[in-house]
Amino acid sequence: MLQQVCEYIHNYFIQSLFDGTYTIASGVISPAVSLLEGQRFMIVGSALNDGVYTYHATGIMNDDNSLASILADETFEGTVAALSVPRGVLDTVSDINDWLEKYGEAVNSPYQSENVIGVYSYTKATAGNAQSNGTNTATWQSVFKSRLDRWRKVSF
Image (tube, rainbow, N blue to C red; front, side):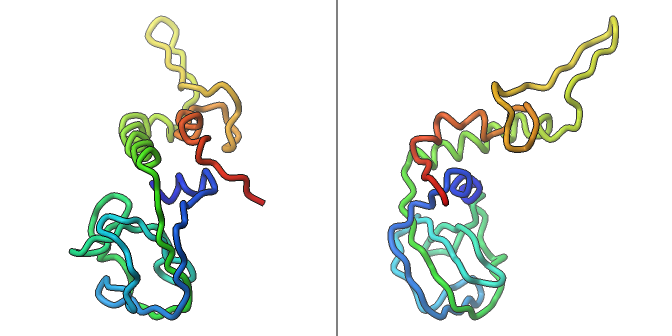
């Protein structure tokens, strides 16, 4: 989810870039890039592994804190970017994950409104303004927009 949030706000909080030829084998990137325990980083230019990950001495982790054993073995010419994601963004990502766990199924439902006379009525939650998905349905973007706007960058 961190990657989706960074894409949404057009800000990956890049601290430093390391360009070069990298090899990923058994979940290990070499040559090694200087990262701190728990630091997020992004792989760019890979055919199989582009994305945002978390560095731990015990192994690279995915966004959901699962071991990134899914990293495919490859050699690529690209960039490893050390990220410096603020705690407030990480807290918001955690809240978005909680919100999606609670409301994700309803948000993804094709039903907007249902009214069975005399039995029940159902209306999907809506946002104040139409969203980029072309509907007026509440999305994580609309619900958390005000919290994420302070970190948003203008993209060209």
